[in-house]
Length: 95
Image (cartoon, rainbow, N blue to C red; front, side, top):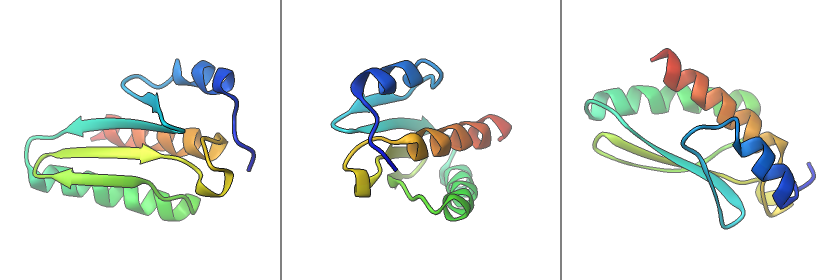
């Protein structure tokens, strides 16, 4: 997978509300009612990550979840990252 240019990334970022392009990755954070809700969403995201064979850097503290996507093999952001970000958004919206 080929690393996207800064312009390509900026163009694609327009379709992802709440995501930022930071240090060769795209990232966002979410807050939930409680830990159980956060963990439930993380589990759903984990299954999608496995299906796409693409895994985020993420952290969870109580009801908050921070997600960072970058394609390590390409040393930056690729289409894979935007595909997974779109899937994560759909999971969040359906919850």
